[in-house]
Length: 551
View 1 (cartoon, helix red, strand yellow):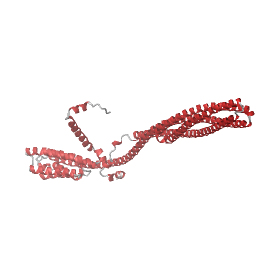
View 2 (cartoon, helix red, strand yellow):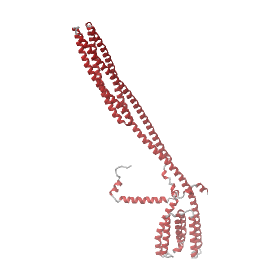
View 3 (cartoon, rainbow, N blue to C red):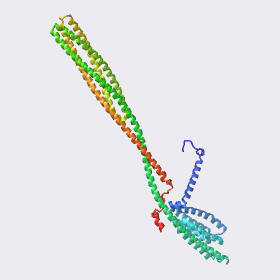
View 4 (cartoon, rainbow, N blue to C red):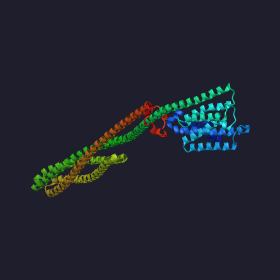
């Protein structure tokens, strides 16, 4: 687990600048050494790349033999044991070793191996031609060919042990027979030496045959293993690819589900806020519609009262024309007119109160429409339609407020007319009681009353028509708000459905991740241990390992 606090070793390295290069150098040497010996492991390298293993092993032996050759020749020459020129021997030896090394570097492993084996056979089998040694040392060199036979199988191929055994034994026997080394021995020792030589030749031949057979068997088994490993690697590669795709798909689904859940929560909150705003506006408009209905009823009553007043005034005018005898009747009717005008004044006051209430409701509606417009702007795409409706509600509230002002103005005129009517009526009554001779003046007063009542009737009709229009507009607004409320509820339901689907997607992604994890844990314990089949030097040789084993 990493943290922001450096460890003690990091603190020491930061205090000592030279510690880091030394540590890197040691780590590099250690890593190279481990990789080198790993490449020399027989089983592992035959599975991965037998050609590469032979190349590294041969390169190592060339360097070791060159080092031994460089160290042993000066000592041998100083002791006086060399039979040939020292300079020639050094030149020939290093030329052969250099040729082996560069052939190996060029990738010609078999050619380099055979040339290197030739040099070793000459040094061991034909050592007597080069160096003066006692018989025991020469026999020891002869038996040292056994090690070279084993090494040749690792360096080149399964045929090399036979070639080394035959060439080394032939070279050693040629030296013994050519130099007549057996003639110098006593009769008791000579048979023993001959037996030892034949035993060594037989041992070399047996070791070569065993090495050849063992190499054939191991090669077949390892080639079969490499073929199986190649099939397993391909299957594991495909499985890993499919599992990676599944994990990536599960993570993508989970991320999309989480993002969709967040968006759905936000949209749900906004939609619920819109529903609350719409509900509040709807209730307010319903109250306004109810008030408008009441106002329309009152205006209708006022219109009826003015019609009655007009009829009464006309009847009073006709009564004045009949004479003085109708003054009493006129007085009674004028009193009735006064009563009606008083009632009309009362109704006008009530209308004024209702108009003030309408004005207050229009202002509240305007404020609510403004708030709804702000909420719709914050809701984004879902609030565009609601914004249009809110704007219409705001326009209706403005129209209602303007109509209320008009009604107030008309009511003012009505009150003035009613006041004038009362004054004229009282004057008419007084004139009718005093003298009958003032009937003409009473008739004129009645005519004025008729004109005033007609004006009042006209104003009452306008009030009635205005209130009817306002009631109709308010009813339409209420219906539109109800539609908006229904659409908002549907939007909330849709967002909730999206939230449910996103939760299901999240659960599906979690199940997919669990299945992939269980497959990874249960199906492949350590896929990194499988080697790469692309490193096999000749994959065509292992296309049918069963056929190799049958042969």
